[in-house]
Image (cartoon, rainbow, N blue to C red; front, side):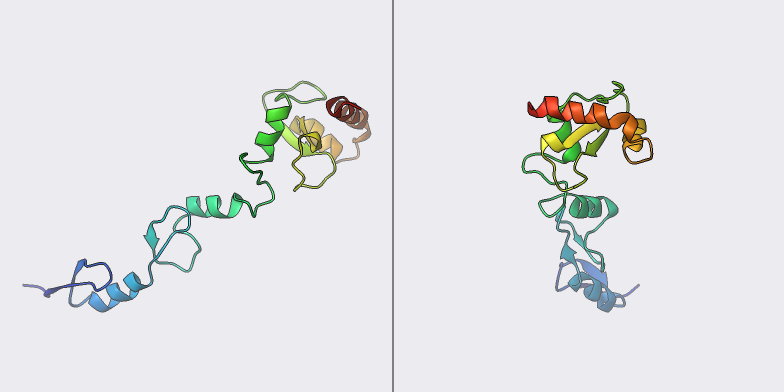
Length: 143
């Protein structure tokens, strides 16, 4: 015959009398996800990994945020051709912050480089690419 069903005072879902207390505790602890709005029970800030990535890696409080633009890569490729300024590689292209400030997403501070030449900049081989990059920046800003 089973236990009689009782309506949850929070969600009106019919649950068994033997599980009502546990259901009500979890149901009362539900809160909406700040990203998707789905109700969830957890100590986490969001309901899923996907929503967590959206919540913590985007938005005006994140260093890559630019109003109307998704991130520094989008900003770079709006103003620069998607190819390395040193060798012309266009399959895999990194974005380098010229002044080293990752929150400075002005187009003149974002330079497209292939992974190899980006690594050159951050290594003992910097002198092999430095003059080319500096010249590109000068031409870009019109100096």
